[in-house]
Length: 232
Image (cartoon, rainbow, N blue to C red; front, side, top):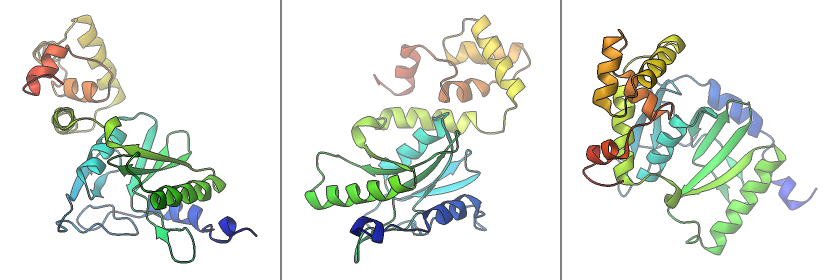
């Protein structure tokens, strides 16, 4: 058995099963194996209120929070957890990857979020290479996500506004289809136009924010810019 296989965690499939079957805490939080303590000095920890996961997802940086919001929008993602896998990389080194993701097609992915891939040192690169090879044995795709591919702070704030307004309740498939049809028939390109059209057709106005957040419909760039106090 080579060195890589010797330190491959045979319990990874079991860890995945546990991660997605563990219930929320009494506070409604979905903790991973490594708990993220809120308010840690030097970290921008947060609890993301995930509708996709049915509980609060702990993150320990603004980049992780932004990535969680991206996963919430991605139709290929069924659900996800943070700090939920323990991976032994060698005799003395182990890792808890940032995100464990279950896709709608049943496959799994692991994501690490970093400010810059180019800024990684040789030791970090080697560490991620080993992690990728171990996960590959279990048919799990590994991705490094850097800040440059994540939404800017302005776009993040805009998306969080849409998320909070658009997810105040669970919409039925029939409600979503009706709202899309109403908005398209009205040629509505601003939220005020969408809200007016929805209300006139006995649909909830907050469906507009929900549909824009999930890329089911779009609004004009001028409207996006106005909501963010400047260009995106």
